[in-house]
Structures are given as structure tokens and as C-alpha cells.
Picture 1 (cartoon, rainbow, N blue to C red):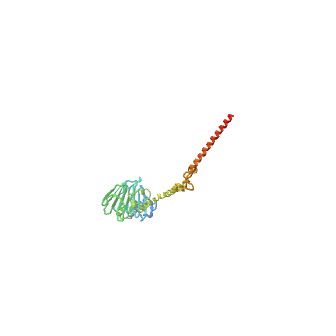
Picture 2: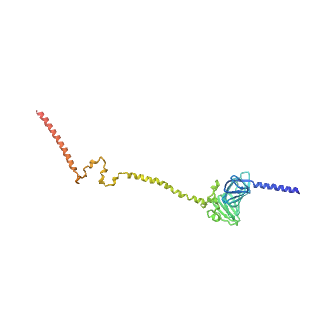
Picture 3: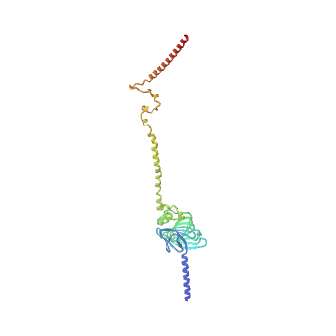
Length: 336
């Protein structure tokens, strides 16, 4: 009888050891850790392994990004709790089954190299079925769950039925009691529906993701992020650009006015004061021609011309008389 008990005890030890080995099986690693993220053994650091059945928690400001062996990416935002529930790996760099159980918080999922049917995400309000997909989802303290599709397709099934998400930015909100909204495009009002302005922080921009996983998103949710509102203030800083060009224009205007200021100041005087404007070689043309004597009478410009003509005429008469006298003398000599 003691032999049977010893055999059963040994068998239990073997089974417990096998379960411990499975629980400690590494299934991925941490690639980004911000503030505080903890696992079953305490704080998780970058490049640390994460294991099957390990519960991962983040602080109110924490953020963890994890990469699984088949290439699946999982981002865990602030105030979150999630358990890697099942992980069955095969030899073809893919998984036969990967199931995570999200208790609360905000997450981003990007499928890896495995078949879509291998992935399953469990929430208090229902199950998210993956179809080659990228999506964000949020689980509130009361179990209310919101799913926003970013790529591919997904299906959410709960007590109230199933909803298909087929278009980018499609959103479904479900409650544990079975109430579920129709699939519609997400908008900032979803934060009021969820009663938490910190929900879906990867879409709103309140938390930043690193790497390619951070390039997915948008859906016009960025306008609700305080960080983005601050970034919309730079347009006033663009306005001063034309003002920097104003000083060169103001300097150019005085340069154009300088030639006008250097002109002779006599242009402003009446034209009868204009003898100063005549060129030096032109006084002969105006001399005595509109000039007044001291007594106010016109100058004797005409008399000067007559005297000049008489002198010229008299000079010709004298020349003529000389010629005549010369001829007389020559004839006198001939007669002798």
C-alpha cells in the first residue's frame, strides 16, 4: 500500500513539474517599457522574456510593448492587466493557438505570421476574433469593451450576438450584459460613451508607441489629445515670416528718394531767376536780349548791331578806296 502511495506522490510531482515548466515557457519578450510594468517575477525590463500564463500589469502611466515568437505585437497601455492565457507554438515559426485574456485597460494588437484562426482575445463582454488584423481595444472597470478596427477585419461576439468590423475605423461597444452597439465609424464622442477620457490613448495620441506599431492609427481621434492641441498652436509662429522681409523693403525706399534730394535746390524757384540754370556756353545768346538797364529801360541791343554794321560797312569803303587809288597810280605810271 505504501508502494502505491509513493507512486502516486511521484506522479504528482512529475505533473506539477511539467506544469511549472509549461508556465515558465517563454513566448515573447518586452521591446519597450515605460515607467512601471510588472510580471509574475516583478518589474519587467526591455529584452526580458514574457511567459505563458504570466499576468502583465502597468502602472497608471505605464506602457509595455511585447513581441511574440510568431511576430505578433501587443501594446499594453496605462492602468492595464492582461494574461497570456494559451500559447501553443509549432516548428514553422507560427502558433497553433494564442489566447490572451484582457481584464482591464487599453491595448493594441497586430497579428503575426500565424493563421488568423489561431488568435483569440477574451474580454469580460465577449471575444474578439482576429482576421489578419490590427486593432485597438479598451476594457473598462465595469467590463465595457470597445474595439476599433485599424486594418484587416475582426468579429466581436458576446451574449447579445456578433458584430463584424470590416471597414477601417469601424467601432463596436459592448457590455457584459449583452448590450452591443452596431458597427460604426469611431469619433471622439466614444470617450463620453466609455466615460473615460483616457481610453484609447494610442488613437488620441495621449500615449506614443514606438516602431511600426505606432504608425498605425488615426481615425480622426488625434484632436482629443491635449498634446495635439498644443501642437496646433504653432501656426501663429508662421505669421512673422513676412515681417522678416519688411526691413529690406523699408531700406530700399530711402535709397530711391536720395537722388531726388541731391538735385539742385533751384528747381523750386520761379523761372525768371533761371540764369543760374543756363549752361556756361550759352550766355552770348541771352546777353542784352531781355536785359534791363539800371534805369529800367530796355538795353540798346539794336543800336549795338547798327554800330557793328556801320563799322563793317565803313571798313569795306576804305578797302574800296585803297583799290581805286592803287589803280590810279598804276595808270599814271603807264602814261608816263
